[in-house]
Length: 63
Image 1 (cartoon, rainbow, N blue to C red):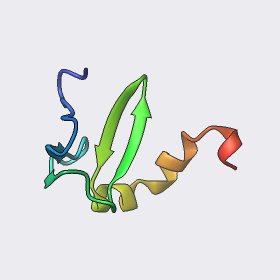
Image 2: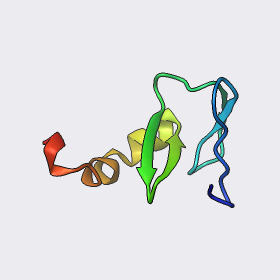
Image 3: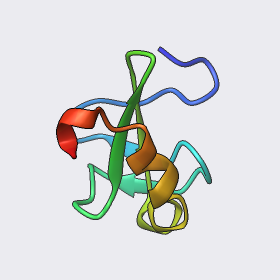
């Protein structure tokens, strides 16, 4: 588990790994990224601002 950005599980609050925004549960507009085996959640604003970088990490099978 990431020491700087611990990610809760289940219906608990989610914390944006970029800006620290907190949300109840996992909002459907948030993005989840798995980096080095660790899930990172990004709020809608951060995901929209960084969508190109997020898409660049997708395996070529997604394209």
